Length: 359
View 1 (tube, rainbow, N blue to C red):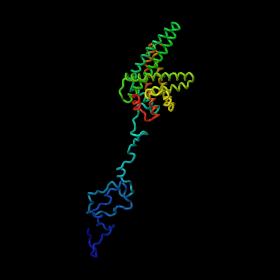
View 2: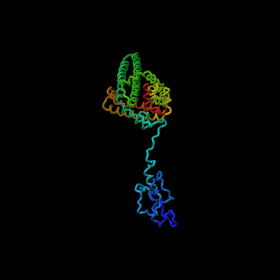
View 3: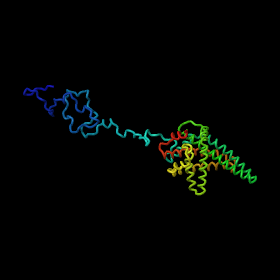
View 4: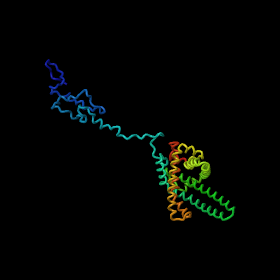
């Protein structure tokens, strides 16, 4: 670029423009430094103000291809650049990441059988009742009907023995013992079948009442054997000292059927499972027992208001209308056992129980 000659004939270098030299444009055709975007939204260096004090040459318009950065304020109070705050969202704009649990991997969905606390325990029990009540009802009817028939036969035998000789009393005693064993066996069979149904349906696997009863029948011997042993221990504990009997009743009610059906283990495993969580387990079972007692009491008062006390009609109606308690007890057994297993090992949930029960 050439410059006009100076007084000595040489080309003189232009002086730095001052307030009295309006004829010189700013740095030729080069845009102001503000035409280049600042790095990452940092404000311009305060130590180098723009040459704003010198008016631009009217005949030389700014380069249209490089518009002034309107988004950057003039160097006044140095406010934070608008492009910085607007172009990059603050950290609060992002949702908090879902960190995996101790086991790693993606966060697990709520387990349908594992309760996190007391309120969740009741929620899971009620959910089991709403999800599986139909096959559970069929199982209860299929096992309760024989028990009712046997009970009626035993009552007839006792009445006949009372009217006869002493030998009849002995036969009646034997009959009562046999009927009790049959009733207990039917009850344990119903518990085993109910656990199978509840577990499979919690995993959204189809299952029928007949399939569940067939499965429970294959576990009948350990169910009956350990069930009788547990019953004897509870009775002896209640006779000798009440507290040991209550303790044993809680341990066996919370885990015995689950230990037999899922783990194929014996009665000793129930103590390992329940003892670390005994008091929460006791509280849950007591609240269910109170709720079941209140419900049965109300049903008994209603039925007793229009039936004869001790009549067969009263007994049949009472058994039918208290079936919801029996159905809910299946949910209590499974949810309590699953929660105990999960407390012992957080990796245990419904998928694990399904695999174990189908072995």
